[in-house]
Length: 271
Image (cartoon, rainbow, N blue to C red):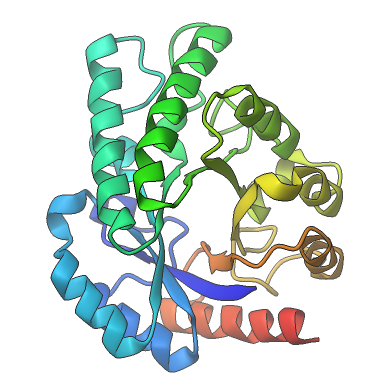
């Protein structure tokens, strides 16, 4: 398993669960200094990412780009994939495709989280799920050209009426015609929704494509009550060799949150 940390470039999300906030260059250099393997970037849109410059920063630091988030599509632009309006849904899909294209240059995945539709989205649940499936079909097929999957994240019940558990996520992915969508299993959301996080990961098996490595209170790993031994054992059991990515509040501050996560990562993966 490999280490990863989130960098946010979205001012509207300040105060949210992203660790580093000091811009790409400073954040990438600091992540490299601490020994991280990769970064996950949350950007307002592809227009703020200079792919050549980002590539040079990553190469200099010896880091990979693990993923690009699409959440700003909702947080900043109020686009959601389950919008009742067909024109807005297509706008949302186009936004996702731009993120896929940018990430794909780096062999990285795009993540669908809050763009799936928030807890208060309009329309009935079955229709909303149908719209989400259509978007995942589109995004998964689009991502295939880069030989990377599209990553879909089940959220807790307070953030979505779509998939809230790994089992529900797996069931939805199995219903798709594309085989190029995988699950992001966020330990914070799982702590709310799953009876057993470890059992859910084992049941998720091959569908588990990315992990958000965070504690029960959304603080960095080790600052809540999450029990990580069974979780790491479950991930090893399913042969997971992807990223454990810190998507946590920058508590007590970004630099210490990054250091705490790396200490925890080394403890749990090297023991």
